[in-house]
Length: 231
Length: 231
DNA sequence: TCAAAAGTGTTGCTGCTACACCCATGC
DNA sequence: GCATGGGTGTAGCAGCAACACTTTTGA
Image 1 (cartoon, each protein chain N blue to C red):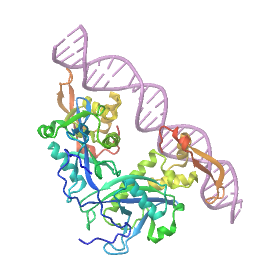
Image 2 (cartoon, helix red, strand yellow):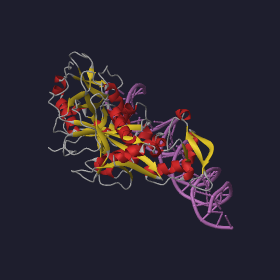
Image 3 (tube, each protein chain N blue to C red):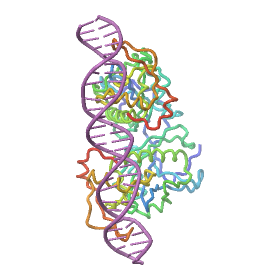
């Protein structure tokens, strides 16, 4: 394969940088936002936790690599994922030079393959009570959290963390967990109602209360008519 | 150097991915937002333009690489720069597999080294009239523009594109050029005045009008007291 | 004296926040 | 019948957008 003349690039020395993706896998369970981590069972860094990651294959784009890594661990295929940021300090991994492109995934805990997850010794942790993490993985999480907070306020991404049918109290708890603050129930519902992209079903979910809460469904078509999403 | 056991990573094949940084160098001149591009003088892709880029050295972090590339081209050392996004489709560069981490730089046109820039055959283009670009560089620019629009509304980054002393009409034109829309003069000034981080000097700049406009200076200390920047 | 840009306040409206009570049901 | 969580409306306030005239001075 012929290489182009690179007028704008310095002489290309032999690079020894390995490219990896690290996935921030978010789930929502019992009112808590959680993150899936794996424990390192060997030295060095034994017993510390890390994000799920993997090297990028030669014929594979970054987005593909992230989806592959996620799928290998959880068995999930069609997951909402977006690139967050790339971490590239020369010594961020003190054992070898690895560049890491981070991806944020919002998964539905009930959907994934428990056996697969268990076989990798992965564990869920509530976002406000994470263990020690290797390298700069703490920074990655902070970066992804900032992005997630912005995203759920400006777009309908939060629904990826809920089942197809969900109640408004559930949705509100999700927002509260991500934003880390309480939200006024009436104001929250007012905004949702004004944007008018949720469909109220006839069914109720009685698992959380005696009265039961109506189930809703996110409607893609109705959402496309919404100009300014804002919560 | 010993390698750690990578429980969470697939067997590491020999990777053939080269890591580059591409810089989006923004400048502001005569009321226009401009971007610095280099022309390719050789096949393939002759006569098309590209962003300024370079390969990342082995001992060098990404941020360092971006600053080095910028400095090699413009001679500028202390420049406001931030990472934008990483482009990693397998065939984004059809000649070899290159991963590109993009950086956005806000430079003061009057400061840089013209000879250096000329020797690289670099040219400034107004952002609304760019030439054909190679590969996915157009996407990179769109991505960086979206980020820049968000940034100048929520933080004091725009001042990096202006000299230390500037007038309010200049500042407003800068915002209008970046946001691509007209701004009401009185509302714009009201917001700036409310946040109170600009210092009005006694001097006027008479180059743009007979009456002359007062010069202002951005005050870092006063800015640190501002809780919610918003324009 | 006139052309051209700089500078300055008010008003109406919209959207946000704050807030309290009734409802349905299982136990 | 009572405890628990679900559901609903209003009023005050703040922040935003819309808007027009006076000032200065060089030519």
